[in-house]
Image (tube, rainbow, N blue to C red; front, side, top):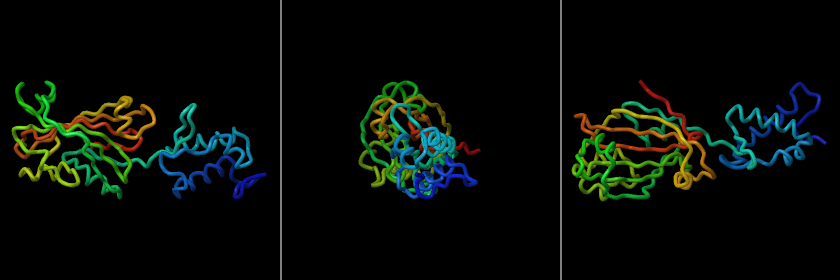
Length: 243
């Protein structure tokens, strides 16, 4: 017996009708992003077809980027990817709002550290100078999209922890120190599996891929003000390089 809305012998293949039905449910929020769909066996019973037909429908949805299939675990709805442009002025809160989503950033750590040689060199610090490291988790509509380590020269921002704004905006933080504008000097992008700690912060069930960005921001005089190391969930953001 065919499920309601699925017609045998019509102009549209049965597997495509099943794909359309599941896509409509995903769009309506019946299955939340990152939620798990029913198993192939359960879907086959629900639509009154064999598992091969269901597999065709799922493969079609996977090709369109709507779901992902994890062998041995099941079928999961993909989160809507956020278009994240990287250019001369890269501002997290502005970017997320531009995507019609609500930005939020949580600080999970703040301490004075001696940065490694590479970070110290990028911030133009000598071997004895310290930096503030602020560790954050950034989210869009409550879904974590990235975790970052932000480094700031301590001599330039002596009371930085007390100057953090309520929304933890880096732009507002720098403005509190008289830096009304800053520019992205460079960004390096790579990819790798998430570590166990990153997976925990980003609410990942396993070590899925993350996009790693290293970036240096400078003030209007070209003096470094922040070095950022960010790990973003690869299927939750789409990085766009602006020229």
